[in-house]
Length: 182
Image 1 (cartoon, rainbow, N blue to C red):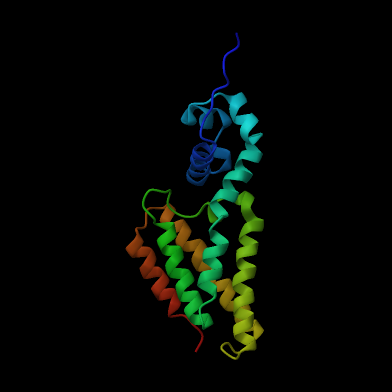
Image 2: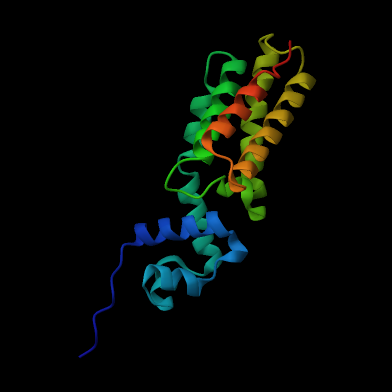
């Protein structure tokens, strides 16, 4: 008689792997660690998710599930200024949310440059629309504001990883919002 294959909650293991990659980065996480933390054998993990890279991709997809939705919600504000203020505030809240690693998996992981590029492009597109509608003086100004916002987001994510609390991040977001072009 052969033993019955061990079953496990794939969603729970994927969430645990996502948190591990978020907290320790791709290079700081091994398949053996994930298996140990999840209480499953490596063959079960490989059968469910594939190799470490495939697990990482699935974990990042889980993380990003709501990112675009939240980004679109923030950027849909009536004015670009409100959109950026909302984006900075919601990012500060996300980077410091209780029960999760500080900062941002996407901002903290070198392997996710393409994903960061998509976020930058969404911000840039919203600001280009603001230039076309006369809220910003030009496309060049929109590009400058987009670069500034991207820099602030990266800085806030780094501050969170270094121990900044929610109040400090919201304060940084508030000050950055004041830098809107006159």
